[in-house]
Image (cartoon, rainbow, N blue to C red; front, side):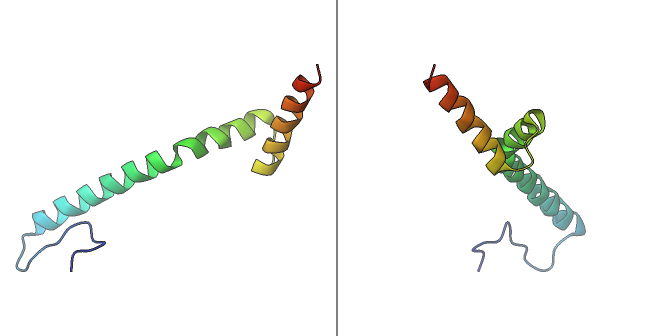
Length: 72
């Protein structure tokens, strides 16, 4: 019954118990989003610095750089 749920409350419950569990769930979600988006934050920043409009354009830029260094 609890599969996929963050937590389980049995009735009757205190309002503070519900609030505490919601806060823990939000904190866990925030941590999950932060760790999951870590590499993408770097990519978005790299795109901004390189002036790329898309991830594909950034990859092409990197391939051009790597290709030019191989031919030297």
